[in-house]
Image 1: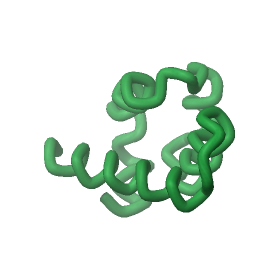
Image 2: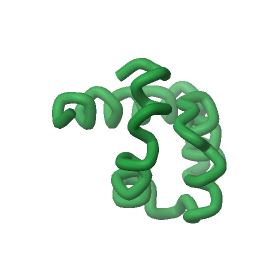
Image 3: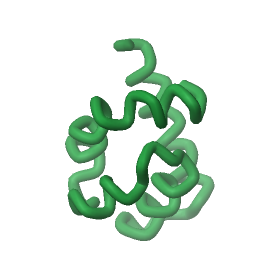
Image 4: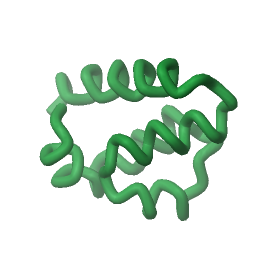
Length: 69
């Protein structure tokens, strides 16, 4: 799923983000506004993982989610 599609479908995906990364607050998810790079940063920060791991996790989630749309 590319960044443009992510931004366009963000309203639909916010709930799925919350399901996947429950440590993120609703306010944080709203502020992300469909920006992949910021999602990676928040996942990294909240879960205390390396940026590369957070990036892989987000990409895997996006690829799996894109298959449903």
